[in-house]
Image (cartoon, rainbow, N blue to C red; front, side, top):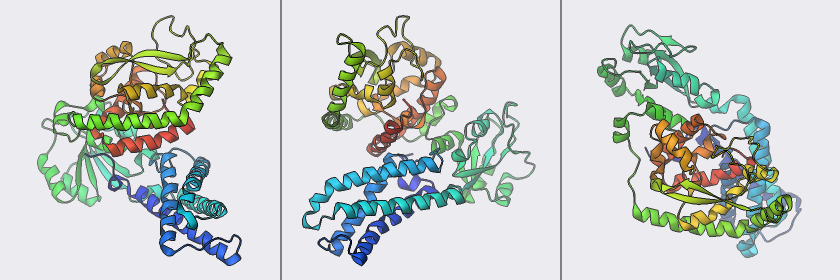
Length: 467
């Protein structure tokens, strides 16, 4: 399976992107037409070719801002007020970028007032459409009807971990077929089906689009003939691991068996040319980031000195485990008290009392991570990858968590797929959940996925999500 592409998005998400692109493309010409009608602002008329370029840039910048702020996240869990707030920020960001590139159009540059009014029109159009989608449950369109083969512990993952509407926005569960091998600790609340006749006849009769194989024990419990008959009649057959990977964007570590890893696509081998190009790209990005953020770091240093005294250390070096298990010292702004580890190494918690007053803000908005630019330039880390953990925790997690050591097959990163998809976590159970996302990233690792993670990290930083 390749990294996420437009064709892999849910149909409703594709509709959302396309319709909003059309609305954004209408906003600028509508503004120009209105201005021509009332002669509010006078400027040099632009040609059709220049207008087309303006419309394209205007629409794409707004949609890129929407992507960065999480408005195209298919599992965005906010009400309309939250969408309104994000859309306001999106328009502000897009307008700021437009004002920067506008002078490059030379004599055909549009007045700032026109761009501002066009941004207001786009804001009204998009929010009206979003409100409409909330009212008619737009994201419930075109759901696939799935039939789960099994009603035991494996099948119960769908009932327990994918029970919310937002988790099932792309499918609906018709029911769970009971098999002899099923554990009693299985499906409790959803429809259990005792199948007496043929699987293929039942699937065709109830218009099943996909069968998810989720039995606890496959030996002598699966009829390959029935599955084959369903397959050739156009019913998709999906293994439970692949289903979770597709719908949740994670790999269910507790369900993995060796043959699945061996025959599954992804998990590419080491490519030295790619690693070299990755380092060059990351180093350039680190220098650019430093140029933009050094004032923030300087202000941080001044505030820390004012709060804790001139002799208080600003930076904090901590040993972490990098690629291939090699240790390195990570550099961070110190966000905890000097005596934070007087009782030994401890995982940080969300409301950790050891965190200083300024440290709370540093951690919430990721400012404490900025000195890691040095680690990126040195090649210890990249911008995207699994977050590096301390050796004391790694040894324990490798022992207690299956496949945990596989996350060290790539360089750690400042941000990652797990940070986008999982909230703050400080327990072994949280580490297991994040590992599911880390393995998904390692399997699907690509430049486009890295770029998507970087863009969406803007949402994490602005809204203080995850860690």
